[in-house]
Length: 311
Ligand code: FAQ
Image (cartoon, rainbow, N blue to C red; front, side, top):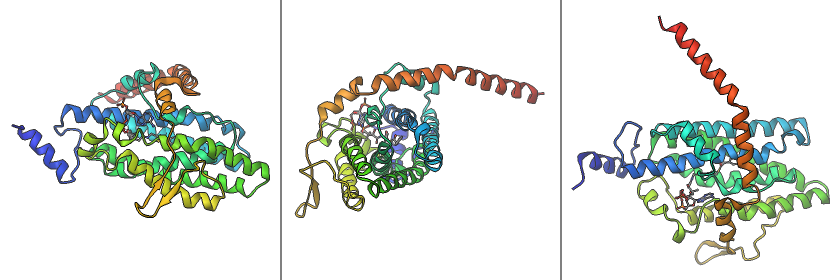
């Protein structure tokens, strides 16, 4: 027999209404949200590193200003998302500890290296493109603070995707060497960007419950399909080849047939064994330690403000 609180919760979900921080919610719903939102926040913060690698070497002042603004947006997204997770009763310190100790997950995609400038284009086009496909439906997530944070994040991601596309377009209109560099970046980022959507539906333990709670609105495979169908015409405009010889549109099913994603590689990256996992966490740890004085100064400033304001 469900309690009145449970009935109200189920009714709000059924009627497409929002669950707010002070509402009653099942423990498992709260845990799922903390898991997903904190992983998402960590991804934004760790995701600053692959592009941060190119800020000092951007090919022009304009490119540098754009890249700096983009990486700064990612920091902002991380902060909105940590705030949204905090409304569920978890603290920033707990989340930070989990990230720094290597216990928390963050997106697999940020464990790949960025050896060339074209990687900035491929990240914008493919990684932000995948992020948009995945995140637009999250604007309707049943938990209010998460859905509302996603609205602004998605607007900024759209701009990020366009800037990546434009970097690749510029390279593709350049010399043979520049075109080869763009194609090489697309070759390296294509498959990992498909893996961002998570394991296939029949191996995704959280999907069914998250869809029932209207946190997720589409399955991992559905969103992957949507992403590929967005990429194909854009790849044509760019003049790049998507590195999947099996990719073809099936008129009958209305779906794209595609080659098999290397799921062994994906799970290895999740276990911490991707090309850059150790480097990413180490960098974050160092940045956290080097920022200790800033946190102390901010806390002391806040303390002084309070003591002068309170009569
Ligand atoms: N990487 O049962 P499911 C960005 C884990 S975009 C690592 O299907 P779920 C923008 C999953 O957590 C990237 N782990 O799980 C940007 C679960 O493990 P757990 C961030 C992954 O939650 C662009 C297990 O596998 N976006 O940052 C991945 O229903 C450029 C089983 O999977 C988001 O986080 C993966 N790719 O669906 C920034 C979006 N996939 O937790 C900088 C919000 C799955 O049980 C530069 N998140 N796992 O231990 C989501 O939509 C979902 O959490 C999914 C996974 C779709 C990622």
